Length: 438
Image 1 (tube, rainbow, N blue to C red):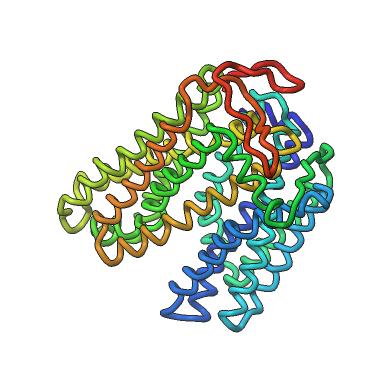
Image 2 (image 1 turned 135 degrees about the horizontal axis):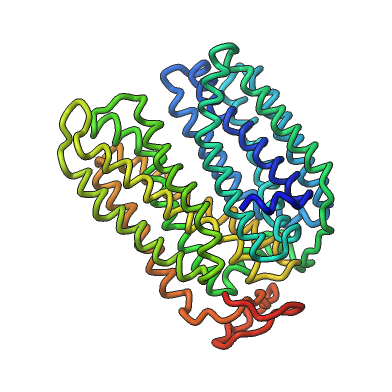
């Protein structure tokens, strides 16, 4: 997997991604402490609103930004986004009102909504060979998992010698370092479709590209399955550990670490698997297993009363379930870039990645509140069954949409304002390349 780091441009871009992720992780910890400092007992509502602002920025603004991003050189877009994020992070330590936090979070996340799809669409051009691109996707997934484990530990260590306000300056340094690495990289020239029509037509171009290709519509359905399972883990882990299993607060990071360990293991193994089989062959079984984990073992664990003082067999069972859930989510998330790359032309790719970014986060925007509100009002078991049903709906839709004989890789040829070209049952050689199995 590390062989892709021999490419100088990708090595610089990957380092930029890792450094920015560490900075973002520090900001997540610092933001929680800032919310408590400003709002006290209302810190939870402040953080909830900040997360809602983040998701709304990703869902609503990413396509709109993408509609106009083609007017800017890639380097200027990426570096400008990093500089805006650095400025917002550097300003956060000086806020005195909650509304100022919301405003700066909106600015920071809007810049992230510009940066992330542009960055994701750049990597296939840097690593056009599919085997290398697959390893880059797994390496990126691994970086996200390591950040989830490393950043909180780093923040905890730093907080023993500095105040939480200084963590925001660590975030600022991370974004500035990311911008410097992007500047130092030799980026391929951008090619994008010129989409006719008004701003709405340009903003929805990527979504219409998704709708034109069955495998991308199936990817959208699988995003719903991932979001349903992920919401159970990220929203309700603390309730499982503290209220249901009656374990110490220190065990919450262990449970989340089990999820990360499962995800990292799958990310390390997945490239070799995808060298031998199609994405559909691994993604649909992973989605089925993920749904089953929600509807059967986890529901059984939740329905069984746990003894006070440790949870008995249920604690290792929860760790195993979380590890399996993380592995399945990684198997569903990592190949998404391959599917988009195979299904679009180079000129369409930036809009397609922006659509994936926005549409996948819209699934999280649905699942997060459902997990939190239903879990708080009706209990863990009803919330779990509801999210399991949501995951099942995504799985069934993907099975129905994604044909077993997927044919060859084929760009989406439906033009804006016209019906998409029908998906062929037989392989079609894409322009400028050889036939590839989808």
